Length: 211
Image (cartoon, rainbow, N blue to C red; front, side, top):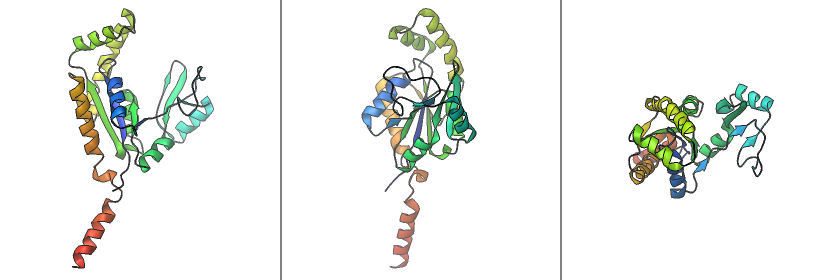
């Protein structure tokens, strides 16, 4: 039977493995797509409108927020960023899942939006703070000051773990990946995600009564 798509939210502190797991999920199912955000900042070299971001004016962005056409939004370093509702709603109705790699504040906004019935939210925890710090250092991307800022922010993220549908401790990447696949596979079969289910039950009822 046909199904509605899921709005899949992945959140975690930096270094817990969220981005790696998101890439693994897309490799597992190439129909999974990241939500394309809207932004008021200017395009950078090589960025394509509608593919990397939807580039909009500040007035247009604020109008979408006012019209409740943004699932979540925030202002970062003087520019606005947000997730337009239209493309996500269309994907859900077409039975396509949309993946969101966002923080707890964005997750909270989406989970109370008009698409909340299709949300699947998952939080990824590190096995320990020591391991989280080790992973940030081993990436070799940041200096010690930046790593310390990320560590300070990590606890703010972790403290909101209980606002999610599922929470996984990423102590083994392969195991966590398999658990994510199991969760998504099961949630796709949720009764609310199967729009033809009622019609099928009615057909069974008619068949039963016509015996």
